[in-house]
Each structure stands twice: as structure tokens, then as C-alpha cells.
Image (cartoon, rainbow over all chains, first blue to last red; front, top):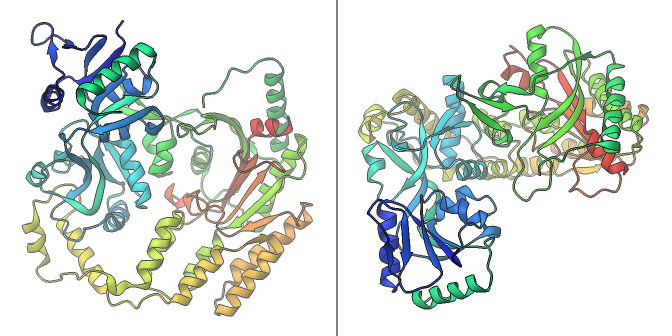
Length: 233
Length: 370
């Protein structure tokens, strides 16, 4: 059993950027086996294990204290852990994985620019269509919280775990709440972001679990990592 | 907070409390209902809105491709029973059992707790029905050994009557009425109404083409929906601003909080000064206060709070809450309820059906007595 476990995204751009980020700071994360193997270690630091996990699972593992540190998006920490301040420290913004969680509606809705408009439209929509206006998202908690703050009342969240931007085109929703980086996918799907529809600017965060077992050996390993990275947590 | 298993004396105490309440509620002559715990989520939760939906335990039913939920309260389930028997009937129902609500993390409230309650439908005399429900629950607490609870009452028909009585554009009245239960948004709308000249320029020419040029129509809303709203927005720009006096009056009425008789006097004074006629709503309020007095409650301790009930979307008239004497606000109320005539139209009634009800939480009562 190693003294400290770091959760690293298991695939895609986020994984590559994470490994490069650590490498730039003198921490080589290397795969032990073949390409598909999920066994990874850190060169030069004893007692540290790297676990490849889906970025979406990392917040939960941090909250449960099963990993000491982890790399994941700010959006996922906010969405997956309701009381995240109490259990996870988002210690360091890593400077990649930029994305904004936003509210987007069809671009042809030229009468809708703000959340205030969206609320009025939702009210009219329910009366004319007989069911609430549907908003597709996988960010159920952040969406509800934001819509509640903005006083949007008559809507229904529709779960969408992928290709959320296509929901209006597929007639499964009227609006979406999702992350976007360049906005290109939104435009390609005939959507636009509302003026006051920014819910959360997100980027990759190096997070520290408050609930993990921080014994002397773990603290020691953490000090070694801090020394390598040149940052003090 | 998850519930703990109950056994021994704790279980016996709750059983006894529930059976006392059950008998007490049945003595009113109400029909006893035994209701399902599990409902189809869409059918039930559409009526509560997305906020309460977020607090319901919803889970998939993969065999049927639908979602189910545990009942978050009894009001809608009971109203659905009444709908099946016919909206034109006069009827009352009692029920008891656990309800299930998710609680925010770190919030020390149970996710399941027992309610025992009564709902009354179709009675012509609203004051008699309001006071009847109040008395039933007040005496129910006494039957359990809890005397002289702290009482807060409100009456949402008063601010609604005020909004109806004031001279203002209909679209403004509509949005204030429907956002009454969301105080922050309500305040925002009041501010907007006072400065409509700030509203943006609205194009009115060539709307179909403009909309079509902006992007392919996606989703169920149509280009006609968009252009119709633009025309309406454009017309609304000519509406005069809400006066500061009107906004202050609305604020002033919502801020009234005082012992019931004094609150009544304040309400009469404030509306008379403003020259607004709320006589129907105020008379009903006065009659109710008189009837509550006769009912033997402690009138000096009864607080009227004009904003009370603004967090409970479906209430639209008399509302009340009974708390353990001397317990701070963090404890749940022991009993509470109110009138929700308008909700019956959401359930399909062609016009609002008189509906009022309330519940006791026996576990909270036992805790207060311990």
C-alpha cells in the first residue's frame, strides 16, 4: 500500500495535458505495461501511486478519501460534490482544460438574450405546448441551482450524457446547459449562449482530498511532490 | 440524514402518537385514505415544479422506460383521489404515513418522516374550512400533550388581491403573480417595472426573415412563437413605468409582521392610505381572526406574517404553522398547512376548487415533548 495516491484522467486530451503538465515540472508519470494497461507510476518519487480514473469519477474518489490528490475539472467538482469546500481543496489551477458551463438556446430565438427572457419563454411554452420547456444537461445540480437563482421556474431537466448540443435539433429539448470551449459546436448546432448564461468558468484543477488518510508517510510524500512541482499546497 | 431503526419505547411512543392522531382526524368525519408510497414521477412532479422535483427521490424503472418517485408529500396524491371522485363533490380526507425528501448535504433534517393530515375540498365557506383545518391540527397537538404552540399565520390572498387591485400592465401583473413565491426574482421584477425605459430596443420589421437568418429552427418552439413575443415586447415598451408609490405599497404590505389583530389594523391603514380597495380579502382575514379567537387559541401570541408561505409554491390563501414553544427556527414545525385552490386547476379542474389542508409531524412533536 503506497503512501499517496493521485487520480489522473484515464483518457483523451485531459490525460495528455495532465501527464505533460507533471512532466514539465519534473514528475514523470509512466505507464508500466502495455498501452492499454491502467498501471502507472511516478518516476523518482517513492510511495506515490497514480490511478487512472475517468475525470467524472475523480471528484467522488477525492470526496470519499480513496485518493489523496487528483486532477479533474472545476465543473465536475462543483457538480458531483454538493459540499465540496468541506471535502476537497481545489488547490491549483493547472492552466488547461478551459471550458465554460453555460446556458444556450437556439440562435433563431432572437427574442431571447437573457435568463429573464428564458423564464418568460418557459412560461409561455408550457401554456402553448402543454408540457414544461425542456433543458438537456448532464449537470443536473449546477443547472437547477443556477435556474433557481435566476428565478426560472417552469422547466424540466432532460438527462443528456453526450452530444447534448444536438438535443434541440433532435427535438428532445429546447435549450441546453453544457460546457463549451470555443463555442464552435454550439454554432454548428444553431445555438447561442445567453448574455447572463455563464454558470461556471472551468479548467483542470489539481485537487487535494480533505477526507483521505493523511498520516506522516502520506504527508512526507506530499512534501516531495510539492518540492517537484515547485508549489506549496 | 438517514432514518435510524426504531424499536422498544421509541417505537411504542410513535405508534401511540400516530394512532391518537388517526382517531382524532377520523373523528372529523373525513374519509380515511391509504395512499401508495410510489408514483410515476412525471405525473406527480410536474405539478410541484422542478424545485420540489429536485428534492424528491426519483429513480428509473427500466422495465417500463419511465421514472418513479417516492411521494414527497400527501397534498397532490390526495387531490388526485378527489379528482377521481369528482371536483364538484364536497369531501374531506385524512391520511398518515411517511413522506420522503432529499435534504441538502450537511442539513440535519430526516429524509423520511411521518405525516398525519387532513385535506378538505369543495366547501363554500372558506373561513370555516380554513379555521376547521387549523383547529383540527391545533387540537391534534393538544391530544399528543403539546399545548400552546407558537403560531404563525399568513394569507397569500392578500398580496394577490393587492396585485390585482393595482393599476398596471397585465403582463407585469402576470409575472409578479407567478413569481410571488420567488422573493429575489419578484424584487428584480419590481425594479424592472419601475424602469421599463431600460428595456432593450426590439426590432419589429421583417421578423420572420431575421429569425430564420439567425439560425435553423431547432427544438419545439417555432418561428411564429419568436415573432409573436417580439411584437408583444415591442408593445410593452410603451407601458408606463410602475410608480415608486406602487412598488413601496407592495413592499410595505409584504413586510407586515405583527400579532394578528395589530397586523389587521396595519393592513387596513396601509391600504386605506394608498386608496386601494382590498376589502374582500381583508374582511376574510378579519373573519378568520375572529373565528380563530373563538376557537380558543392564544391570540396574543399568534403572529401574522405577510410573507409567510412564499416558499411553498402551491399555497395561495390562508397558511399557518405551529411550532414548539421556545424552540429555535432550526427545528422543523410541528404542524402546518394552507389553502391551495389554484393548484386544482393544474390538476385539471376547469375553475379553482376550494381546497385547504394541513399536516402534523408526530416525530417532531415527540421530540419537542422529550
